[in-house]
Image (tube, rainbow, N blue to C red):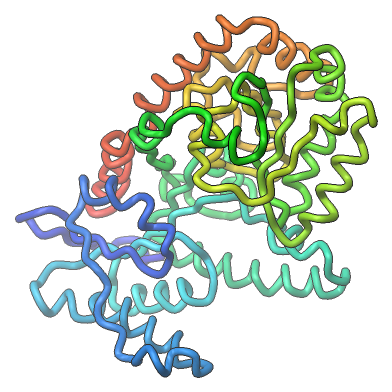
Length: 385
């Protein structure tokens, strides 16, 4: 982070030049970035394709590809760039140290809650290996964030986590949401997902999307099985579909399946990894997102974009992604609340449709690329002013 009193000059002509660095995930927000900034593409990777498998050469090429334009930009046109990364590993650390040396503004976008993430992800390893791996990762992460002139979490919940975990000036921490374009949901025909997994066109189902890489994500579903079980028992024509994959897929799938009684187990469907996700959400009648480790999951936004009513638990940042008008029945703390909310949606198709439409309007209003572009621009303009 730049010392107090340091001046971050901004050219008076043209828009700010933004250099996204290091993660293919930044491509997903490129439309929003291009609305607000002159986005500078990476340079040329000098390492031939045939040599990139050699240990160390592929990473060296990436350093030149991304850092070359940053190093040359101030002397090329007299305008300081702004550098944006959206991960917190060794590569962003190198970028942050270079930005500090060159007095270049360095911005870190936080996509998910990272506290104890590495230990949770490696939950199949030994305790010693989990904890040592987690410690080394967190040391790097904390150093990256200490270098940042702006930290941009994707949800209010994640901003609160930053405030709780790190000693940072909260003026440096601004929420900039994930943008979501809705056209792809409108362009997705109904019925494709059902045909792909063997459901009849008239069958109803509740969906849940999770990651089996993280124990505390899929255990959210496991925790709420009793409520889902009651709904399936009361409505024999409904299915429960779980989509997701990961290193613990076999173990997690069996743990969830075994917790359901045999009387409904044949109506609990696991798809593994499924793409395009639009097909699942357009066909789903109700969506659940049950997790104890999610700060701002795209699946919650995508369900709303598909005009699907969604129910979330209080174990993360999901509630903050919903319209306030639906939170009373769409945010649950325990099995009884989930049963009442889910069963109500099952029995009232008109309300499902009304809430689904309200969800879609919420996404169009709060998460459209042009809205998020304005959030980005305000965060960067405040930094440069």
